[in-house]
Image (cartoon, rainbow over all chains, first blue to last red; front, side, top):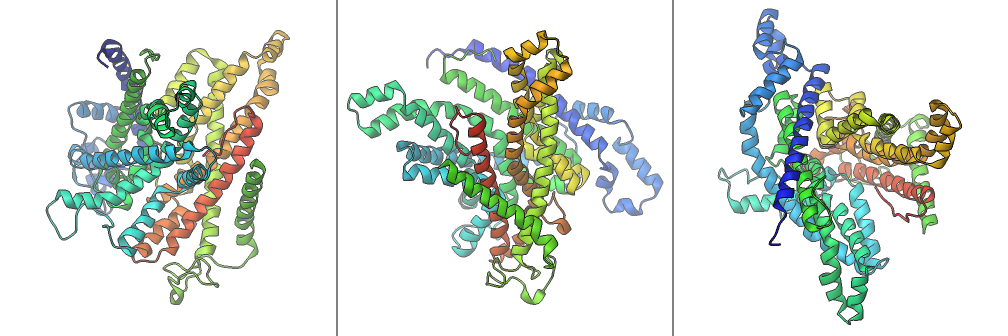
Length: 329
Length: 273
């Protein structure tokens, strides 16, 4: 790994970023266009119930002050201008600047997603190996059937059942939140115990895809000549499986991790809501329920940026893992 | 093996569809019948799935909820398939800059996480039947568009299409006689496979409070409403609607697996969602 192809990698990253800019611009434009086409009224959202009793003139002034009387293309352009300086507007639901909401909450979401995804990779690899070891055997059939059932199960439903089982019946883990309601300080131990259930549910929701992919990849690798060669040399079955087949079989799967960011965001939206996790995904749902356009728009764009970054990461990893792939995509 | 899967899936799906179509009009059971004296009864022979926090029968409500979920799922999958096939066919048939433009549009749409885009659309247009269908349809046409485009691109190079062109067939005749029949099975399979996705998406929106309203309760709405009872320890109003999502999903996936093997027998594929 001493001579990484830095120059071609950088060139590809640059090209991808250049592609990302128009996509992000298109998404922001689309967000403003949808808002303009919808019955959503920013003055209503800003003033709340006060809008019902306010006089027509006050409302007109408010509309003018908010800039809501201008065409949406102009509002979009202004938003882009202030977004470039870090000002993403003011959240009407949470009553604080959008950038503050993001900086306060992003860390918790990243913690949740990284923990969950690590769990998925570990558990999924174990399950995949177990299933591929004897294709068509009882372990394989059970794992495969369990994966399809889990894939069909709604994530929020799994989360609710997990709360019922572990927080209510067994009473071993907290049902939600970040810390106990009694305490004011955020301590690592409390966060860890509150993290277990949401991270486990998010991990389980990603598990079917990963385990089945590992299984398929391993089954393919086990048919290769080098595996047969290792067997013929008299190596132990376990050595062949773990040291030879898994090594090459896991690589394509790991490189695809970046493409799972959309699913991870979808899962986080549901899991954070179920477990009242104070992350950015729960804020998105709150914003949607309160029709908080500034927050919702910023978070939609942020999620899109995360997805584009994940795709870039996948391409870079893929090129690194497989030298036959050229960095010119 | 495939035969057993076909029959199990078909039987389950038939039973589900029959229950959903027959129970509401033929019985005079009222799913909204509130009986507070019977509230939150655990499963018993007279209420096999128990009753919810207003004393309503959970089994009956599940059947009605599945009716709403299936309706939304099927209509949204149809919308998505029609939009996706149109875009894909246009891109594949026209080629050149319209193709590049349309595919960039697909890429841009694919970069926004589906549920997030769905949440955004429903939040702006207020929750209800049509915004939910629009939100699902809008986010699920991308894969169909890519699939149909790829199919049309490969069909354009086939000898029988070239023969039709040199034989002087009009564009219209080639499209109707050669392209549509070849693309239809795959688009149909994609549409069928999309129904569970659409149901999943709809129930997630409903669970978040951004989907179907209470008087048109879907399975997701029921799980949303059952959350309070669950936190008090009563699990049945939450458990059974979830099972009602899983079972038809698996049945549809089983049928689609058999269908896929029939249209492309070389790729011995497995059950896929």
